[in-house]
Image 1 (cartoon, rainbow, N blue to C red):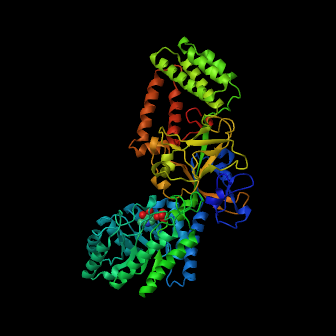
Image 2 (cartoon, rainbow, N blue to C red):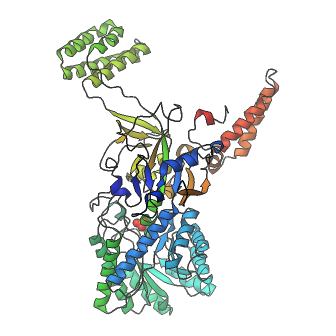
Length: 638
Ligand code: PLP
């Protein structure tokens, strides 16, 4: 576990158990061992065929743990409750979950259900997000906020006002000054008194990758001049009482409590000024930014780590607001935050299999092995090189060996391009050069493990912004990993690889595959997991090469021999599903292919019924997921 820093990034949910597998303690520290869930057992249960008692789902797979979600929500709430009590703060904390972080129905429904006891609400940033938030919050606490952020048109504003009519505690946050006219106009037409918030563009700037939306030149929010104009205009329309919330967001992954307190303090001053100007503000919404320690380093100087925990975060917020308000004699506002990353990151794990690994033989201990290959080289013109190389080898002159080997290779490639060297001879030269590199210890010992996954679909932030996540084998952790490797995905794209890992590593310690791997090799499966990817990764993923999303299961803790139950299981999008996304009609495609098979079968006296079998195989292929399957599950030969 030290090798993979599990104790750092995994605490308090993930650890290595006595079988050398990753186990999950959904309720965090202090959980009894029998309440831990062995991840390998989950993978086996889900992926084994139905005939063996499994669920027959294909990998890659996302395993969701609603119990972890519940624990995250409760931990956030109690961190604020504790800070409020400790600092004698005279209002409560009432958070919202920004659905953009993961819009999955079960995730949002779980958050609403688990948070209803403490008025936890939702934040939406677009019309479909607002629609889903409205319907989910019908089952939540009536006091829960529905915060409407993002760019808005008349339709978005109307929808938000309809939400108010439906007695959902909806706040329309102005991201742009122009939205105010729309809100005034539509609320009059619909006869609904709106509750309005403004998003302030703070001067406080978060300098990390996720802070590019902050500062005076940030993409979102109103400047102080614009806020003053909004106040004036609302006053004109006798609607200043509608302005009830002040919002800001200085970016995700705020690195330190110092920066957090700086931003919150600035916003609290604006809040106090709004009170002075006569607005009926009641809520200070501090946006997102509560960070995750992806590498377990607790560092303030990195985009993937943060130098605080939940308690320290809540305490910094409460103290900064209290200080500003007490100085001005302003009643403490209700505190709202829009933490997404911190709520959903831990709750899911992406699991995938390594299907093969590039070979790496240990270097030969003597140079004798070279002679055979050298003798295969046919061309008299190469004699000089041969003489030089073998002489250098006998002298033990490594630098010259490498130089001569490279010259030899270059010469042979030229001859091959001219057509005077055969492919077998070229291969012999390549083999010779590889042996030389290995013998003198300059060959790259890092191997490529091919994984049954698309980085573009499932870890888009690694490809898009170079974000690192903990990626580790989920079993055999009691065994020393004898190799190091990078992970290369299934897409025909050189960016489809993971070659940077937490801890600044450019390769990952990995175990040898048993046999040649589980899919094409018929050996044992080697499972890897990507952790802490519950926020943003599902929402941002694409379908490069038409690899769709993974299968998804929801796993709850329960008493019983396995300590877990799969409460929901859905296969990932099939080939037909991803084709449909590209406007193909799989049904018509199938008919075309079937028709062709029938025509050919009619002309084939030897196999008149062949078209039937072919058609049913094709149908299965449309129904299966696009990822690799073992030969035994191949739809065309089954
Ligand atoms: N609120 C707003 C307005 C955002 O733009 C974001 C994301 O950047 C969030 C909340 C969620 O932030 P985080 O995931 O850091 O909690």
